[in-house]
Length: 186
Image (cartoon, rainbow, N blue to C red; front, side, top):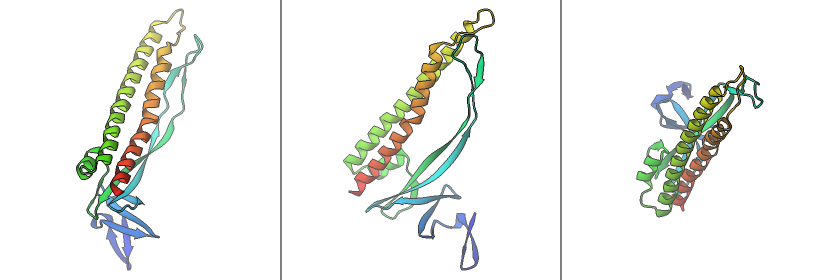
């Protein structure tokens, strides 16, 4: 984690930002690099991306007595946002940091309030979905008759609610952060 400047090695942690092939990078969280995504009149937005590999899971098949099967894992990429207000330091674009920085703009605050509601909906939906999945698992295990299990519909309802909460709402939350920044730049 270093860059070469005029044949000199410079460690990343000694930099705040640098430009490479026309792309401006900010050094964030010690040694991570976030690239400039959008430059505004007052607020610039930077992002870095983290990729996560997910393991598969055992789930019951739909047919009675069908047993269990392994679902495939997957890969997801999460955008982690950062911002710079009026040429100051680059900070994490968390709702709390943005609330402090953009507090004097009513439209930005409205977008951040919507972000907060979406956060509650995401975590609440995930908790409800996982709870229903857990109850469905117990009902499925208690349905054993002659070595066969009947999958409870709550398994599928719970998995669906948890999945939708985890897949759809984070993107909507990111949109609200961007709306707050865009409103501040107007």
